[in-house]
Figure 1 (cartoon, protein in one colour):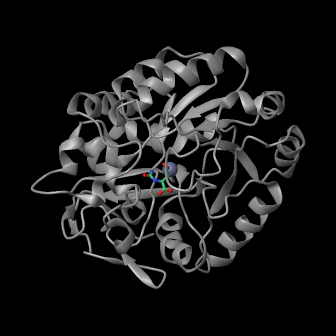
Figure 2 (cartoon, rainbow, N blue to C red):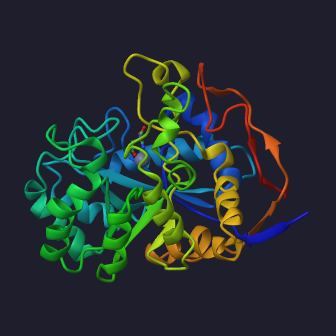
Length: 345
Ligand code: NCD
Ligand code: ZN
């Protein structure tokens, strides 16, 4: 049996939700990852340091006893975020990034940014205080094909932004295209990207295999096989600009299996195992630790974790459904198998 022991990883892009739903999904992440960058797209969104600190306390209170896990909070950027709020966020030392959702681009982005030009004051403050900007990199223009939204965003919004703020540190979240990989590879220092397990595992055929597959629908939407291969190459390259961000985004079964199903794939239940499977299949298990445990911490200027975890090459069956507050959800690969499991500590 094959085993691999790595430094305990971190998840640099995670949706934990709130309340009973959070209590259902948080233990899975905390059992695997030491820290996670927690997305602020609650209803209403986490737009201030005070809201982030309160949300952080609720996460700590919902942790199973004896489990060490540090939520790294983010603020939701709006057209009216002030420079004062940014400097307050930096001073708090609980906020580690500011999330830019183009308005209407994804789940709970109705309060997002209408035009990034409206955020000049906040962006200048982030550059000054060295607080990273975390980017949902998709335009939301009805004229732009849904599969092209990331590439168009890079050309129209991200490239000019990086020139205008040469010291601003930026994470382009959940890469989905070869274009984005190339852009990140060629970008200046201080620009990095996260890659999800589901975008490494699936191409867009997974949305339509034998019928419509709502549990494979997420944003940015899955892309062609050539793009999946480019992501896999980037993730397993050892280039520190690419690191783990699961974008585990739980929604209830009812919200997914609907005439207008929500975007989001739930992967936190096997948050490191799915990556181990992908890296092993690519013959790159020796690159997993850098991607999962080192490069993100280095980018965020946080210490690397000291504990270690062990993963075992042993298949197990994924439950068809998992509890989600008063409801249930369908995890990725529900009813199927995952090739790697986490050894109990
Ligand atoms: C996320 C969610 O459900 O909050 N959904 C998703 O498809 N990834 C939002 C996001 O990260 O875009
Ligand atoms: Zn997300």
